[in-house]
Amino acid sequence: MVAFLASLAVTFVCAAVIVTVGVKRKPGTPLTWGEAMVAAVFTFFVIFWIYGVVPHQFLTWADSELGWRPDKILLGPGKIFDKLPFTLTWRVVRDIAVSGLYGIFLGAHGTAWVLWQKRGQSKPKEALSAYGRPLLKKA
Image (cartoon, rainbow, N blue to C red; front, side, top):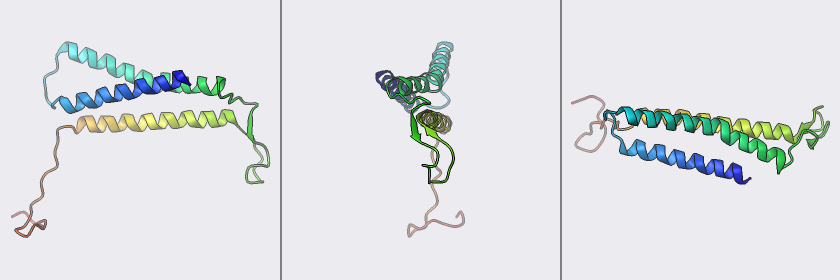
């Protein structure tokens, strides 16, 4: 459990670094060769970490300390709504949970891309009438 929680802590620290750089760095700022190399290595590390290390640590934790093995049955045949003829083991729960982790990371990855590309952009102000209502046509 300690390794899994530590891997999540490293993930949150990396996310904080990305947010901090995204807020401070203005779009269109020239990038030096050294900055590009550091950014590339950091990006590779984060992707390796969230798609490789964190799920691995969860799987290791579930297999060892939690004991979610294939012979540990959660719901047996006939106990699932009294009609379904299959067995639900803790190994299946483990696999569903790690798939959820991948889904969360993929969603966060896509959101980070969009936010990075849209940083520094502001919404255009809509024209208001003298009474404070939005105008339908430009004046």
